[in-house]
Length: 216
Length: 302
Image (tube, rainbow over all chains, first blue to last red; front, side, top):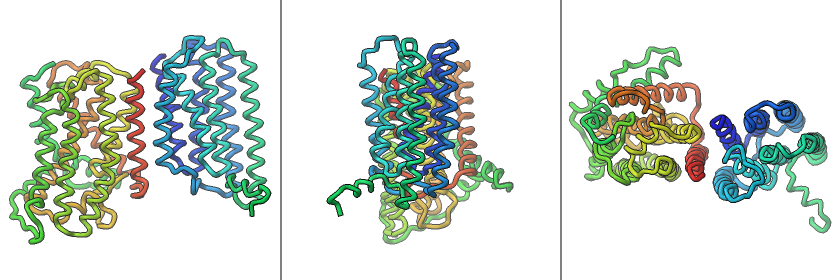
């Protein structure tokens, strides 16, 4: 069981790194989906036995992140005819290097973070933190609105993984509420991406700055 | 698990069997393409032919040109003296030999590059420039990966490192370093995602273009050296497998050699199903390998 959760968390970290280095949006969506499905196994692996709450949480999040989100995002992708992130604000190799630094920071921080409960795996907190920060980084460093939405989903994945530490204490309802929030947010953002694209013929979110008054 | 008579088998085995590896890779590629391919022993025939020929060198070249292949070959032989296989100790282990191993590979590369530059040909200079550029990314990855192994097993010499790894060790670490070392193996040996050994276009070659002017005995040493490099880096990878459970040093050596052959078959399969990445994307691949190794190192800090 310890090996199983270790491999799952390594998979989580590797998918984060892949997301940092991938320019094709379709691939990125697929990677994020795989990450979501893998996270569905986490409640079961983290506790070693199958409770009703863990099953519901795992299956629900896997279905949402593995099927519904990719379908929504792929639909948006089809409609706006964007294939890849052309000019990210931070390039792919620097992204990977920054990612490694952030990973080291996550390990250092995870080792010092006082936890109220015993963590099921020493890797859990670093992997969760790293996933959270990867999502944040994607939101900051990429131009396309779709990648930013992906960053948001990845961030939620990180929160989900971190939540596993306290799953005994955290009510199921809270986690389901977070899932619902993310679902609504992705839905709204999918629509928004479509509308931005129809209005401006592209989805470079940083050009929205030009809407400010006083800027020619 | 100290030095024994069995320790000397590995270098001899490597010298004798390494020309087989390119043959295996070519055979697998031919199988995937539906051809018969060259015979498995083609490497030996080529060496036999090349070592009987008289050489010729351009007047613009100096002794560096002749020394390049020899020094590279000697470096790989020296690396074999510290490289264990199948958890059997290397003949000359000492503390810190993992660093020496990495730098021996670097020295061999330096002389290959110097010999290429010595010809004064612009094509060879281009290949040399690329070789060095990719080495900038590959060498840190190798060093970080070896450092992770050293930390995991708490020893500073390759033989105890691999002996400790064969006895036990974290599964995630093995998987990460296995993936990282495999990318390094492909890159260092100029296999397909990085360089195409069969290409006939000088503009896109890396390793092959550096050795265009070499012939006869020199070319023989280059080919044998390339085969030995496949073997040395293959042994680096094969040591990650849990071979320690097998009884007897001879069985473990055979299993290690089998793992190296299996790696050659895997390489042939990778070469058959993937295309070469663009030159601009190669650093990204190598940084990826470095990140895998760095993650392995981080895992040992828990």
